[in-house]
Length: 73
Image (cartoon, rainbow, N blue to C red; front, side, top):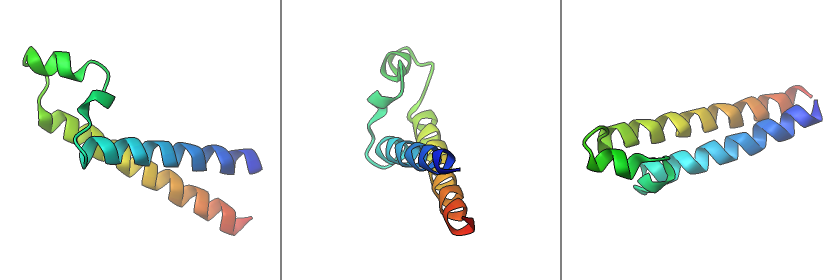
């Protein structure tokens, strides 16, 4: 159970940070191949913002899951 708590916490932090940097800081270089695809017109900034939002939400959900596990013991 301890391993599940640690893994969910670390993944939650990672997803939240990546989502934050992509969505709110505009670090689109964190998305693999985005800049090349954007230059070719295959992907837009709306796509990058959506990816950042999804990662941010997944991170928050994982952190809430970790908190619930910690309180349930």
